Length: 110
Length: 118
Image (tube, rainbow over all chains, first blue to last red; front, side):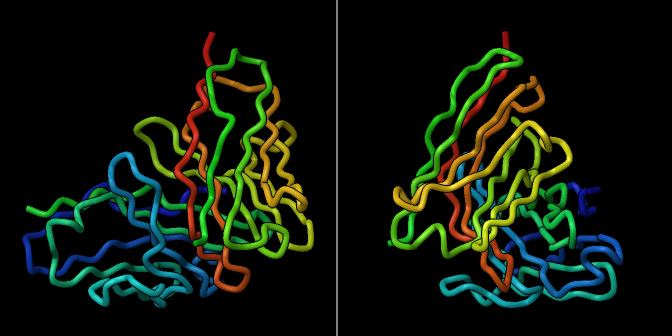
């Protein structure tokens, strides 16, 4: 059950786009279209932003999008806003040990 | 409104036991996949356990044999029984509903802090 690999931090200016990568293996990200992404503000519970790799729950801005290529999933945030500054975590189904999270990425809006 | 409220956290000595509860409203716990996720202070999210609607349970290697996930259908409540607690179990514990097909965790409770220390 090794954690998925995410960059520790990313940053961008308001209005720009950023992408956060999430690298797993052929046993998790690469084998299933079941990657989800979570936003967490300090002191708050995580919030689901993307599920099944690219689907957005009702109420989540269309500035958030997800994709996958091979063993790597990605979260893209376009038109960065100050309120997007938060920690972001990816998560994947992993078969017999069913769930694995990424280590998290701190997004700073400059 | 779909909501989850965790209770039961606190300060416990190493080797002790604690039971966390997660009361659900707005949906039926037994008809859903339910999970526990924890977050050590200043650290990332760590999946702990899941119970499927059919009753199958799974655990992270770090808690296997020490933690037990269960539910009480009459109380619409999820539980996490934690035994043989260690300092490294110190964390905020969240419960969450898990989409059966999507495996998206939504919603999450507000979390309850467990501190294992002498």
